[in-house]
Image (cartoon, rainbow, N blue to C red):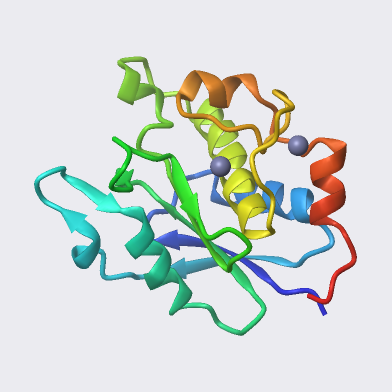
Length: 180
Ligand SMILES: [Zn+2]
Ligand SMILES: [Zn+2]
């Protein structure tokens, strides 16, 4: 029995395209079941006041405590700015071959770069980053194929250059019949 993937909208964050994101994740990870989920997390312990950002690894720990059942995975979707200590920011973070991932839309929004809002582009970027971070949770590492969704992206331009799809090799790994 495959584990459920929960797409968890955090602390009331409910973008108009939430169902589209959930569906896109379901298509990428089919036949794994994917469910929309709402979660209230206490983010205060993850807040670093000197950086005005939230420590992504601590959010992963909080998400893990919300997993409804063993064998499932959860990707948190948040609008707060995320970091890990060695980097200025991250679009997302996940546990390699683990159960939790998190993605922030904060730096995926056009407005962050001084451009007009573009919800379609924001959805597209969020799909790529959510599939990417969940890919890590499925054990995938970064892929050299520049069009593969598992290609690393440090800047939003790099997010825009890659596709939302796994290359054949990454897809085979995600869909490999395993014990899960
Ligand atoms: Zn990555
Ligand atoms: Zn790949």
